[in-house]
Length: 269
Ligand SMILES: *[C@@H]1O[C@H](CO)[C@@H](O)[C@H](O)[C@H]1NC(C)=O
Ligand SMILES: *[C@@H]1O[C@H](CO)[C@@H](O)[C@H](O)[C@H]1NC(C)=O
Image (spheres, rainbow, N blue to C red):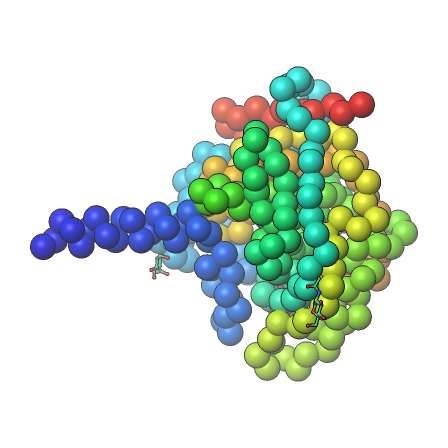
């Protein structure tokens, strides 16, 4: 009965990968990977057979976006975002801090497909670069469609005035920072939160196909990188770093080769 078993294994693996590799985003006592040292980005593929794409993948993230090589695509649509106010939780994964959304948060429609917002997390410094420039921080809003396809909306931040969205969770973020080292960090209820409150509709954005920027580096992820760089205060960046593992304080994966990919741009108006 080897064949049916193998078949089942393949289906199960596809379901796990399809329905989301967040399964790897569980709060482990021991981190499976870090951003420096023996478990750092150049070793990720060696740490677990499931992480092989981190070295072998041909469409990995993040990338440096060279703006004058971005291809204008007039078929790209303005972003239509339909999020609702929902109760969310804040989780410290030790390599990033994340807000977890319930299923009824709403989402974004791209290529006539509905992507539901599941989670958002921060990197500092930024992972993507624009014409070689690295920014202070980057927000990834992770969306998943019914068929398992993943779309990430990335926002870059430069140092400046406070970010209002982060301002709404700053007290809770500080609670995460105060948690006793070594103690199991549970999710913290944040209360009602609106993902796009105080944000205008983004116009210009870059689009390319990449991967999760952390193991298992799963590919075929659509990235929409917003061209408008927002502001974040130094205190807010410190608050994002404070709860993280020492080896993950700078949780940005280095830029990956673009290979045969093209970055497209939607100009907006
Ligand atoms: C690889 O991923 C599969 C499916 O998620 C899991 O069952 C398996 O334990 C993982 N292997 C390792 C070494 O973590
Ligand atoms: C959030 O949770 C509180 C307390 O359980 C509840 O009163 C409130 O209606 C919830 N808000 C939303 C938007 O679900």
